[in-house]
Length: 148
Image 1 (cartoon, rainbow, N blue to C red):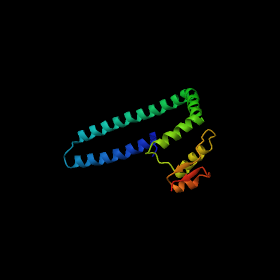
Image 2 (cartoon, rainbow, N blue to C red):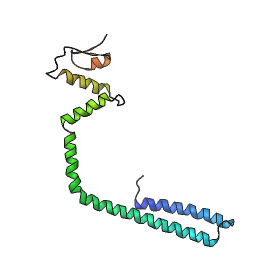
Image 3 (tube, helix red, strand yellow):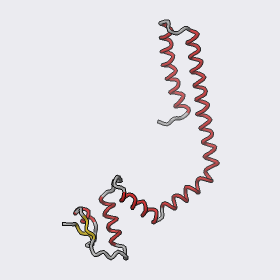
Image 4 (cartoon, rainbow, N blue to C red):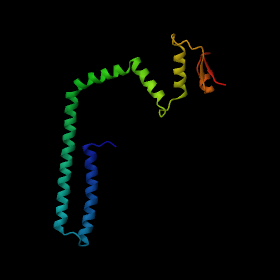
């Protein structure tokens, strides 16, 4: 649910209604006097006005900061995206994911990594032995074989 000034106002009105019902019941059975009931209503109204001002002020501040900061933050975010899109960064991310046993990696990704290793010219391994026969069959190379 989006929290906007209108949403908070609607929730506050609903809460105020329930609080008034409870206070009316308490006043009806003699637990609260009419003056105490009015004091609680006034306090809740002041709290609502304060919260409403904070939400409105924060919304206005965010809009101003977003307009002022966009020319500064935009290029920084673009630079970070460009840096993370480089092959070295992606390879590091894949390597970290493979080394982390808690990261779930699909068989297709594993097969793709094996296929990439087989196609590196500097890798002179005649055969890569794989424990999973299904994974070995997914790699379109005779250099990847299943351990029997």
